[in-house]
Length: 459
Figure 1: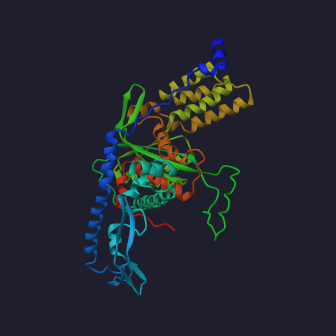
Figure 2 (figure 1 turned 90 degrees about the horizontal axis):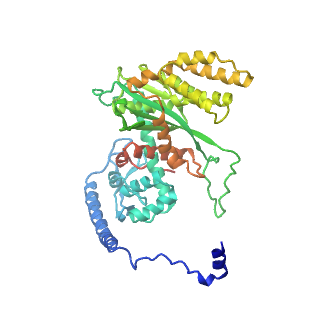
Figure 3 (figure 1 turned 180 degrees about the vertical axis):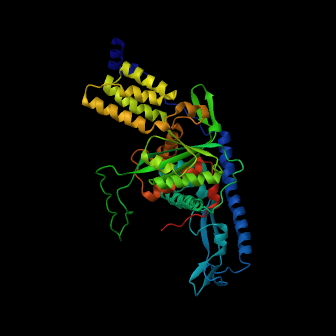
């Protein structure tokens, strides 16, 4: 203490801290990499422009037909256009054709290339969409500068993401509608598994209060945002599909899955099950002999819609079953009570052994003294009695089905929480749907599918 006082009273005796020293210049290899990138970027742009010119010559060979009447369209003009790609801005003079009676217009070159005048196109758009699928738009803009060497504003990243997301969301909707028709063809059922596990659950997402985007009228400033007086939320429903044979135990007590497929939608219980069924048919994972194992937390909307699978096995999540026991135990023995812990532990052992009827009988023999305890006990007995057919945990473990919904809980965190539930985030319905569609492509390993989807023009 005395030493500290002497130092305070004689500041000249204390040596100032040394500033961390930086090298005089970046690493030589880093400089070489940047020099090569700067040197060859213009050359790659020139090479890409040359290939575009070659495709343009081929596209001028024949006049297109009108998509409405089928008649050849007449040549109109060839105005020059540009668009932004990874290595810079490209230009072309695509021939424009018109059908006077139908008022239709086409530019075959742009249709063939899959680009739009004045827009960010090609692989650059897909990479920006990838950055926005994992990071907020402002951060994605900075990452684009650091990783891709291109300067794009956060709003530019947002526009690209909305267009790609709408294309992905529209594809998911169309796929769900396609498989909803009994005449549609799914994947081959030659290797359909004997059982497939389907977990489904919901989590909330903060939504914007305003229903329309703000628009500036003339030179007037934008109107202020409405005040959020109370939370406005929608439920995101997420499903996960996996095979029992692909569950592994990398270490004692720790389980993982080799692969899984995720499905999500905003708020519609019927739609999430339609999409799950479509995904099963796309994978070839369901035939008349496949047992669909539905794992849920006891929510009524899950069991009501599980009936769409005739050959099914319903499982109440083991940990949700114990949560109800904990509610009664804490009320009976007190919070952080060792006696409550022992009582619930015994309930867990009995349930895991398949003794659900014995547990219910033991609960019925209890004689609580207070009205609150009696009501809590009756709620627990009713919950176990109603779900007894979904609590044969010994049988589920023996068959390898598992007894928990950890897979779908993890899916919530990866699909929704990691990107859409960061501090202060509020979403429009369209924006949430589009970003969820992109995150599904990424997490399911289907990002390359975007290369075959045309970017959607949004108003």
